[in-house]
Length: 327
Image 1 (tube, helix red, strand yellow):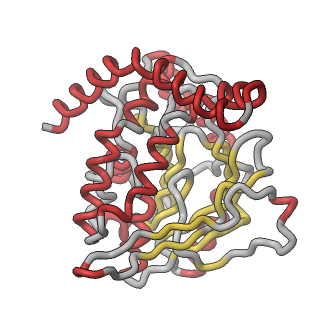
Image 2 (tube, one colour):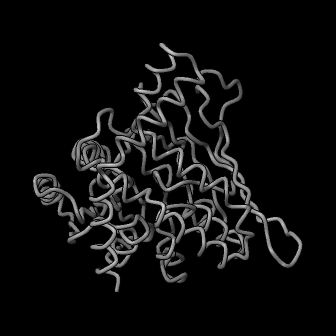
Image 3 (cartoon, helix red, strand yellow):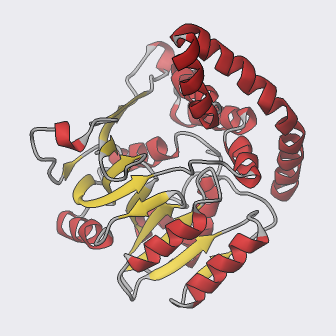
């Protein structure tokens, strides 16, 4: 068996069933399929189980929502393929998405291969990233900086004059990525102490330091498309996934592991703070249209903070439950 496809929760749950249905339809038969549904509502677990049963796949369950790297490592333990393709549960894959990734890995010897990743609606029009750059430049006192840049981020494919071709890169993200199974196992799996941010940076940086190749293969296309309307379960998982506790623990560990100056990670922390308000984007658009950009943005922050307050008790309970499972 050449490839294991691992379907992993990213930040919400309501796109799971349609995304998995699309994944199964567009994945060649013979691939091992694994889906992680820990903490999900029973209705979704049942539908996922039924769909995977029809293709001989396997479901990994559990009592609580999991950090993405924890879910990926559970799938890695059961992987039988030479390669493991991690696919987030809010991704739409194009037809023939898998074969180009595998061909690229075989032909180049790459340990990591990423597709061309699009974002939003309509699908497959606006690029999310097509490879990228990372570095940890030296600073005073033996510490390092933290740099990350995404190629062609947020650009319409139609506006790019030169074709994007298969090429070496320094960075791919986990929306969808193919990884050599034995190499990943030789690292002890993905770092479980990175709970919510910079998992992609850590994996790619580690591979590069070992001289392993990373490629972008644009013949494979996927589209990151979160739900338009969030359900209560979406919001609950989203708030845990992007909680400041998970973010702070992740960045503290990343800083210690790679000797990165903590101040250099403020941009990542700022992303998490801003992303926590992502669910209020439609509200922000309406307020900016009616009140102007500055006042509209301010009103969005105030309104969002008020709406997030009732979720705080649920978040506290979910964090307590998660901590108890890790102790």
